[in-house]
Length: 454
Image 1 (cartoon, helix red, strand yellow):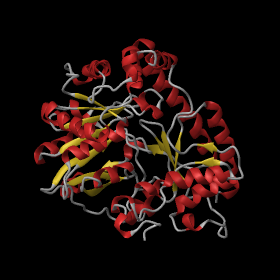
Image 2 (cartoon, helix red, strand yellow; image 1 turned 90 degrees about the horizontal axis):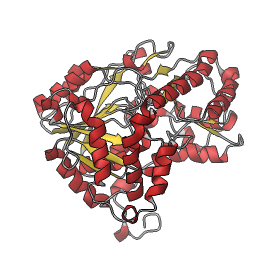
Image 3 (spheres, rainbow, N blue to C red; image 1 turned 135 degrees about the vertical axis):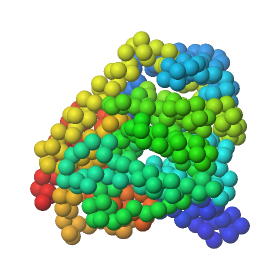
Image 4 (tube, one colour; image 1 turned 135 degrees about the horizontal axis):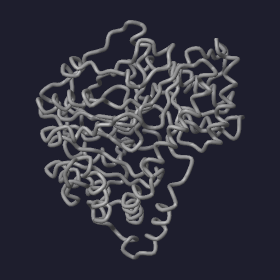
């Protein structure tokens, strides 16, 4: 018997034997905390609605018969055209909405479709560590092997607030990770980056790793935006070794320094690049689950085929609303306002860490702030439940903050391999995409850390 199931009904290995994930631990701890209501700065969902012109478009779509029925599996024509029109200026040419754009049920399903389309058992996929945890299962389901390549933090990270730009790639290390089995690389920029400061501070050298798939993702907790020069080097390696680039650019409208889309660097790089987008991130609607992939027709056709077999089509009325969002966003001044608002929220929030003397990453994109809490000393005899006591220090910090000061944040070791989880154990990730009154409430509670800072 396995959890009450007879041996014949044994579940697949891909969904068994997994420890409780970070989202469950933090959300359950927050619900049970004596400090209510909890100020949730953990998961990256917005604390406010999309703008009225998009909400109104969603309401209007519900009155249309066709918007309440199946959409074409590759997406509603209006949304594909709106996306192609919105991104063509960045590409310097007109994108073909019928062959170079496909709509997916959120960016995550889009990435799963890309892996399912090209990864077979034994193929290798390169991930930059730290990584978004959903990548792992998405790559492993089709039988892919993950190869990790670390980003290197600034040496003074534990003591000094610095730009996320200081997180660096060792390109010799990256090239050594490429093998004949490497099929994709995942890029994340602006990255949901986690910090390696302790690794460098302790003088531990990075580890060499082999790979087959390289994915580039842009929604990093540190908020690093890869420079044009970095992306060019990555792109050149992929062209040299014939590797597909999966560029996760879900925060592509939230950047505060010059941002280069890797597919625009050259025709040779574009030929190998699949770019991932998210209406949830663009329009403050993470629950809508509308995403897309853009890329050359020879790649997109197979992503579309995989998407068709995973979920057939995506929610119709919200696709229509997202089409209106793209059609009207520029005229409404929405993109510029989004950047101004988020930069203001970041500045508002990090002021408390300046007060407390806790160093943090200054994000170049996205809405995550990574804070070094090495100075925060949790009482040695603090009672942690077994499932937290067995995890790295950042899980204990997260539990302690929830229980004692009523603020939820995410422990970043969840985004590391077990061997390197200790690297991020002094850090905490905060999502600042919340209403200003929530940010102020969080700051007031975080001041309660003063008595624990040594």
